[in-house]
Length: 186
Image (cartoon, one colour):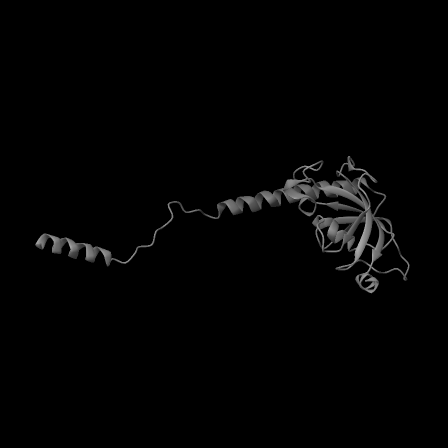
């Protein structure tokens, strides 16, 4: 009986011990993130050099740098004071476009892709084109030069566009239907 009481007392004292924190077997540092950032900065610098080279080769156009990290040049610019509308959130636009490499190798030719109808900022479209269309007026044609992070990035389009390809995209904005106009029709 004494042995049982001693055993129970030892068990009771062992059960009262507070739990200890378990530490991870391995601790990871932030070095992976630093390496990734450095690799992406290097890739961007290389792509910007390629874009600047493409701009120098196209001496017939004046390219502008956008605040969103891409370059663009007008083929057809609307200068009149009547048509000053650019698309805004919720507007519906219709546009045609072609995509090529910075060396003018055609990826998707004009007419290969059907005329696209797009609700501004409400549908899926690669980020550079989404931002570029907002700079355009109805009837304008613009060439955009996008670094890969503004185009299809690491994954490409899983068809003709590969990993981390900077692209040249020529866009013609055919029509803008403003959000208010759409609401009045309903």
